[in-house]
Length: 325
Image (tube, rainbow, N blue to C red; front, side, top):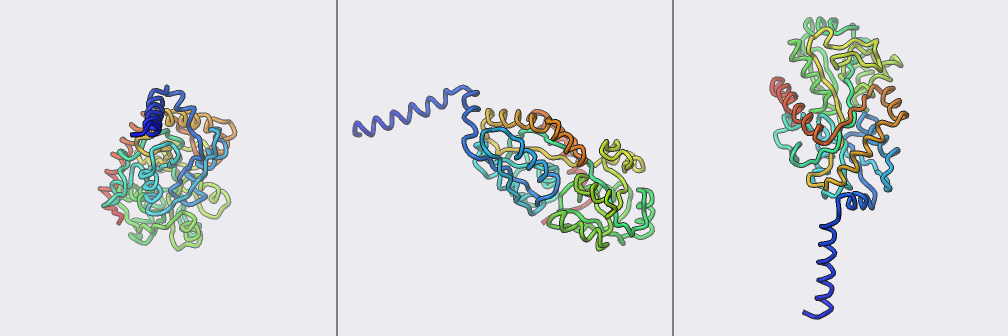
């Protein structure tokens, strides 16, 4: 081996050794050194997209956060992309209850493992779903809807932005707890379902509240009930489904994940920035108007919450018999 080659090899070895001995705070300061991609697993306009763009606008990491919408397959396409990305902190996903708690029970073949393939960063926000109906449907309350469905079995159709979304399984939970039947119509995104709801091709949805509430207030659709146990501070005049069906709860949530193996210093810095951004008064105000509640916690708290949600929704999916191919 020539002297120049030995010198180069020695220099490289010392460089890697020095990196291995760098303190965690130095590694954290070195990240990020290039733009960060934040994948949203649904089209623009919905709650996960809104949350991602708020973070992109307000984050102060020294590098831009670029939102990348990769919709399809109930969110699986975008989530798989991140699961298989390099674990370097530069590719993240705004995960949902569907991509990280429900889909594993719905899909016979999952392209990723909801737990093993990701490093939890932080729960970001949650929201009720809002049971909304076409204005021509002769129901104004949950009791009215149950009575109508029992008198007209299988006559109604409910839409969703995809199989496995919280919008979908909220409807399955409703059928299970009321002993009623209706047909599920999955769309590629809520923006495709809403025109059919307004037009009457489908009659109801358990849509994400941030998307549905503005339309209900404009009179384009009718709000019937929210799916949390307690009424939403954003719309206290709207009753809960649980006021008629005790115990009914279907919360949609959004959380940030990185690929498994992402260095903890990058996770920690990202987590701290999430806390800062979503606690900003102007962001809190925006979330409140949309019917979203900031739900922030540690990566460990997200791990525990995700495990509980996987168990809950796995039971709902199995009882409903719903499957996605």
